[in-house]
Image (cartoon, rainbow, N blue to C red):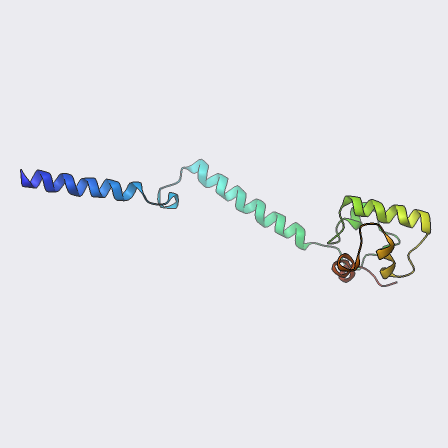
Length: 118
C-alpha cells in the first residue's frame, strides 16, 4: 500500500512539474515552426530593406520615392519638399530644407548624411 501511495505522489509531482513549464519547453508542431521561421525571415528582410538606404541624394532632382528612402522623410514630408521646390525653385543649400514645413534642425541632422551637398 505504501508503494502505491509513494508512486501516486511521485506521479502527481512529475505531472504538476511539467504542466507549469514555459511554452518553449514543449515541442512545437510543424506549423508553429514554419510560422516562427517566416517571422524570422520577415524580420531579417525588413532589416535588410532598412539598411539599403540610398546615399548622396540630390534634393533638387529626387522624386517622392527617392526622398522617402531618406531617414526622417515620410510620404507627407516628401510631398512638402516637392511642393516647396515647385513654389520656390531649387534649394541653394541642404540647410534650406528647414524652410519646409515639418523639417526642423533635428530632422535635418538625421537627413544630412544621406544628402548630396549643394
